[in-house]
Amino acid sequence: MTSKNIDNLRDSLLSKIESAADLNSLDDIRVSALGKQGSLTALLKGLGKASAEERKPLGQAINEAKVKINNAIAIRKEFLDAQALDLRLASETVDVTLPVRPEQEGKIHPISQTIDEMVAIFCEMGFEVAEGPHIETDFNNFTALNIPPEHPARQEHDTFYLPKKEDGSRLVLRTHTSPVQIRTMLSKKPPIRIIVPGRTFRADYDATHSPMFHQIEGLVIDQSTHMGHLKGCLIEFCRTFFGVSNLPSRFRPSYFPFTEPSAEMDIGCSRKGGGLTIGAGEDWLEILGCGMVHPKVLAACGIDSNLYQGFAFGLGIERAAMLKYGIPDLRTFFDSDLRWLQHYGFLSHDIPSVARGV
Ligand code: DAH
Image 1 (tube, helix red, strand yellow):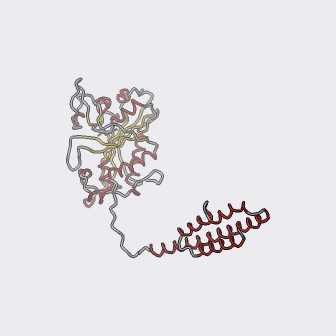
Image 2: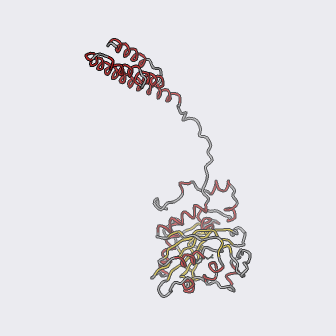
Image 3: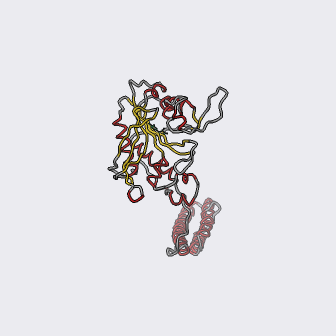
């Protein structure tokens, strides 16, 4: 080996590098020179055979050649990279004047939207979401709620019964979300602050009734809960849900077997000009049922009514959605008509979150 050999090899590699047409051939050249079997690597390996005084200058020359080649590769690579990017930019231009392609976007059903809105409001107040099964025992759906077997309220509920069991008992499709009150009180100790959105079932079908519908139930049990808490909580809820900060409201005495006293809450509305507007006006609209939990219900769940009291409420989700979003017929919620959903449905960014505020 002579220094001439090294110079020749270096020059021929440098000229190949300079004329490499693309990144792949550049890499082939790099491997052919510096790889394990590369020509420059072979020269380094051959150094052992050189005489002692030649070894140092030859070694230095090989290393210098290596540095030059590496630099040349880096410069060529930068050039080829930039060239490849220019090529891509030129070939991938976007014509911003083209019309957009029509896109089918899914919509969120008004029931899901309304449940999300209600849950966000109540969670902000410190409520937790509880759930229960659609198939219930007679005890949870009726008896524990102070609706004994011969109670007239049982007839009003148009219950779907499952076939009788051998012992004569029969399960029901829950007629309201109230049995989740019982389940919760039986399984955990006060303080309790829950809301229960969910499906309910009654044998009824017309423009304002469907055999399957949704309710949201609320239950608060604590040591010093009183009717003022009930009113404050529900007034705040209705104002936030309907987005009317000075929404008038009133509580009318009513009757539910599971609350004493019981009330129905009305909100102010106007029916002028045929339409219905929620807010100040000359009229009232019933919105929900509520009351202080009956001592017998607490007793059925093993809660001492001398120590604990609470309030409960229940409202129909379809009805609230119809009022808020101007949907005229309850049955259309469950027709699965895509045109209806496109019209009344919501985009995913409409979903309220507690963080964003309702
Ligand atoms: N469960 C009742 C119904 O389906 C609604 C209701 C009224 C629930 C008053 C309550 C309440 O918790 O206190 O008609």
